[in-house]
View 1 (cartoon, rainbow, N blue to C red):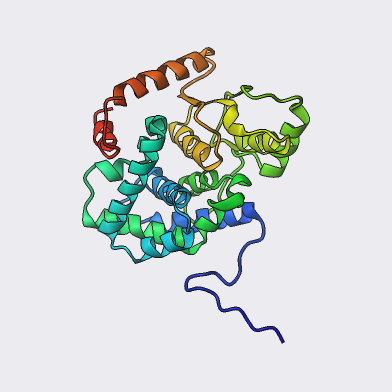
View 2: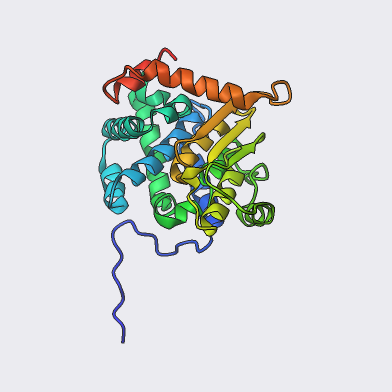
Length: 289
C-alpha cells in the first residue's frame, strides 16, 4: 500500500487542472478579498499586489518559501518586501517601470494601516489560491492571470466575471499558429488592441514551438485602457518576451503611427532614469513622473 503523501502547510488539496480555470479562481478570490464597502478603490492596487507576487516568484529559486515569507509578514513588512521585489526588477529592467508604476503607487505613496491590512489580505488570498503555482515555472507561459484579475476587479460583486475581452488561450494559439510561418529573430509583432497581452502570449508559445526565443523578437502593443497596458508590461516579464517591448496607451485610430511614439516615449523614459544609481530611488523618481 502506498503511503499517503503529506502536503506542506497551505498547499491546496484540490488543484485546478486547467490553467484558465485556475486563473479565474485566483481572480475571484483576489477581488473578494480586496472589496470593502467602507473605502472602495479602483483595481490598480490589487492588480499591483498580484503583479508583485508574480515578479517576486521570478526572482527566487523557492517560490514556496517566498509564499511562506509573504504570508507570515505583517502588513507593513509585506509592503517592504514588495519594495524590495520591484527594486530588484527595475535594477534589471528599468524600462518596465514606465508602465508598472501605474500599479505601484502604494509602494511610493502614503498608505495608512487600514490600507496596508487590505493589501496584505489581498496578497494572502492570491497566495492561498495558488498564484505562485501559476506564475512560476512552465505554467506561467500557458495563461494570462492578470487579465482575469483585472476583469474580476472591475466586475460588480455577485455577477459573473466577464473575461470576453481577453482572447481564450486555445483559440488565440490556434489562430496565431495558422498565421505564423518561417519566423526569424527580430520579427516584429504588433497588436493595436493588446488588452492584457493574450495574443502576445499565444504568439510567444508558437515562437517557442518553432525552436526560437520570444526574447529575440520585437513586441509592440497598444490599448486605450492604461491599466491593461500596464498589465501587459508585467506579463511581458512573466512570459519572458525580452527587452524589446514597446507600449502605447491611447486611441490608435487617431494616432496610427503609435509604434514610433512608443519607441520615443520609452527612450525618453530610460534617459530620464539613466542617472538613477540605486534601484529603489527609481520608485521615488516615479512620484514626479
